[in-house]
Length: 133
Image (cartoon, rainbow, N blue to C red):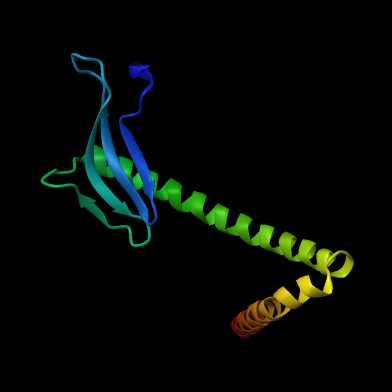
């Protein structure tokens, strides 16, 4: 198993990851995880952990991971939006065919406000794009 391990492990956090260097080449053949840095994915900041100095290899792997992670998060964001559209369609079908008066009363105002807010934002953004285009 030790031969199959990557050199680095990234423990994903809310805004990035804690970065660990892995080592299984010790006498006990245990996997050692030494934290070497913390990465903030939003601003790209990399903070070495404690007194650790990052090598060029460390920095290159962190940069590679950051690039891949940003692509992954962007794809997930678009997928979440597409799921929201699908969920709106399912909600419409529910409201039209199965919802009771009490259920509709419980959610109508929230849905109308959220949809109004979304529609206003989308119309404004589309107008901005048309003005630039």
